[in-house]
Image 1 (spheres, rainbow, N blue to C red):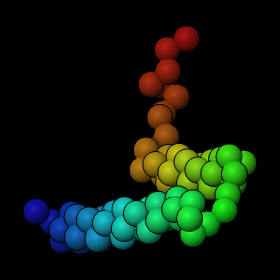
Image 2: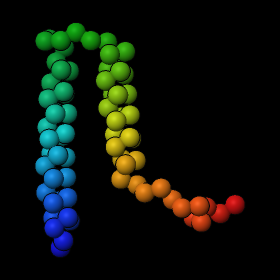
Image 3: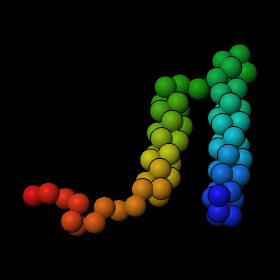
Image 4: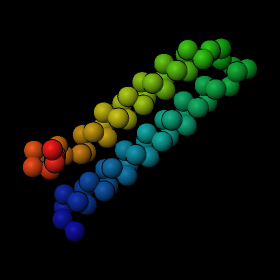
Length: 71
């Protein structure tokens, strides 16, 4: 395995676990006895998260060349 592959696996695993931990912490805000929120608040949070996930995921996909498209 190349150094780049090893470094990617190490960093990607660490960073993925950090994102998952932070999502779990965000989930703690769902406690209605401690916090007050409405559906609009929840929509804003998850729309922002989903947009960021889409943008980040797109960075991992190389653009297709023109020859890949059939007309």
